[in-house]
Image (tube, rainbow, N blue to C red; front, side, top):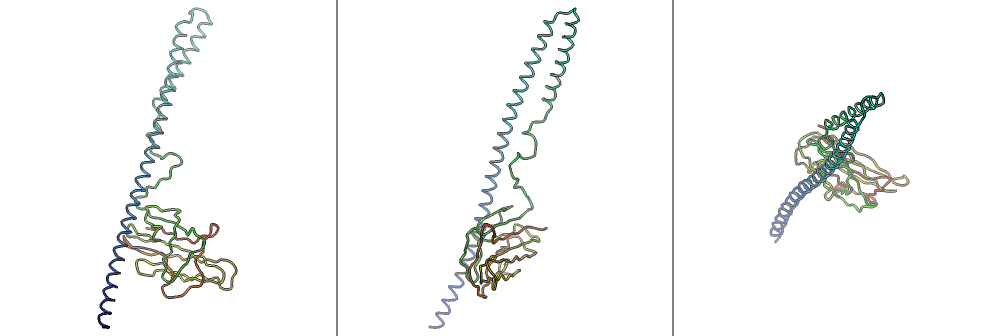
Length: 267
């Protein structure tokens, strides 16, 4: 009977591990789809903005050209109707010639002026999100108090920066887009009399650890951990509480002092 229970237990553990791998794969696919959707929406908005700017400049250039040409024709007409012979007429003729030359120069400058729609710089107010080899993120916990337990993955749910869309606020994990050296920092706040043991984990390997304590202090306190680590493409990086050590109190965050998680590709 004991042997049967052991076999069933082993089967259930194997089944659970298989399901966890399926969920992890599904989360990675979801992250990639979300990133593609965000990139497409950004590109669409950028192209619409460029098109609007181009149309505005085209209408302005046409209107300005029409005005200058109208002035030129009027000056030519006045020139033809000017009486030749008197010194006054001669002076008016010279004035008209100067005005005509000036108008022609303006038209020439306008025709040779590059259109704003052809310039490669993005319109003012649009943040470029094109970083072919870049990866950086910054996120923080938006709720004041988070109930935690042992081996608890912290979800930093509010994103400040997410270049490449490699950080997932729903899972609290960053997926490395390519092999390289990365920098990760995290800080956790706990309240009066409390303490938290936390770890920075790559896949299942602990690469950083931190102890935040407010024992004997008043109010909230926080420490900051920083790790420089080499990771491979597809590696998952996240912050969790210690799987064995106990903690006292919960995790705290506030608009004036935020529990946060940050990372970027160094090279």
